[in-house]
Length: 153
Image (cartoon, rainbow, N blue to C red):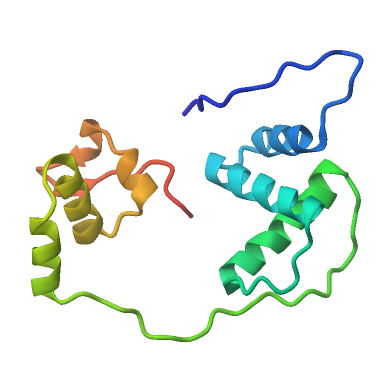
């Protein structure tokens, strides 16, 4: 899938800027566009302000660590050796789920394509981007299957 991402033109005499190097490396390694956006954002935040106590979720902390490791290993080409960083653990908690009645009431407030998308998300367990990327040919009504392309994992 081609991405319509604006690309900056470079003058031959000036080296690419850091974040442009990061984007170029991510694209060369075929990382997803969402990962590219997240890594660039975290690297920007790291460069401008290293916030230690932002009270972010464990998954965010792990994403920050991955972005920084990528920056040093892949963009700067610096071998860091063993990293003694602990990965943040998700706290154990029960998920909040809606009752069937609540789901029906929610869906009744939607119409058109938004209702169809909500029904697909709820009924199939698709992620939002997986749903947005669906094409008519991905639906097989005879076999009652949906083909998910470029799904996470």
